[in-house]
Amino acid sequence: MFLLCSLFISLFLFRIFGRQGLYIVIVSGVVLANIQVIKLVDIFGFTATLGNILYGSVFFATDVLNEIYGKKEARKGVMLGFAAMVTAVVYMQFALVIKPSPLEEAQRVHDSLSMIFSVLPRIVFASIIAYLFSQLHDVWAYQFWRKLTSGKYLWLRNNASTFVSQFIDSIIFTFVAFWGVYEFSIWIQIVLTTYVFKWIVAAVDTPFLYAARSMARSSRSSDAANGKKKV
Image 1 (cartoon, helix red, strand yellow):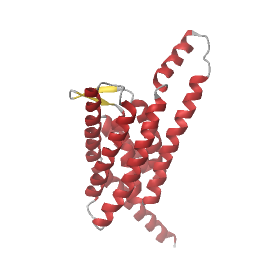
Image 2 (cartoon, rainbow, N blue to C red):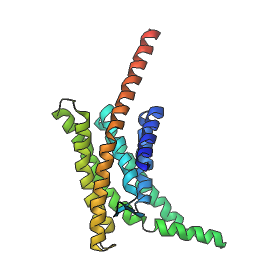
Image 3 (tube, rainbow, N blue to C red):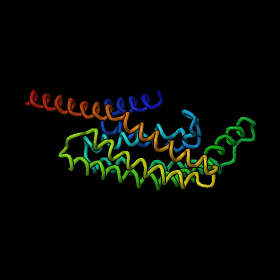
Image 4 (cartoon, rainbow, N blue to C red):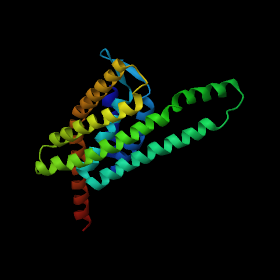
């Protein structure tokens, strides 16, 4: 339900705001996924990080940008996500340094923020490295498969580019973020489940990518028709 919800929201934002809506998906998805990734959950008996599902919407948004607007706009989305990550961690470190009010409730809130965001620098450092390598590869691979298939088989370039990119992201991120933090058996579970769930997200988002392309074509046809009427 969370996966479907995130993809429907991404599609809705694209429908309302166009490419700016996709930038919203990337920026919000990157920031929130790096907070949610701290939370471990059990899914089908395996340990996984919660941020995997939301992070998948970032790859979806990047692929839509790549498909409809080209490599330049997709790379712009990647760099916006990168800037959002760095900005968020800097702002929150300032927030933790500032002394809270002596009121008990204020101290409780400060302690809660510290519990979450004191580990954020390591998470963000891991995420930045994994994000840049995987997303830039995804943008390149998507165009590679598009040229190789002469623009056919949208499902193939979407999945072929994302599957490899998600593997790169999973290995780099889990190693930098969690190596030495958890026991090896737990770490291996996180690596495997992280990739498997991202793979599932990539497969599930394929119909949504077709829907986004259809929306874009419909919008362009409508704009062309309106232009002819004005002439």
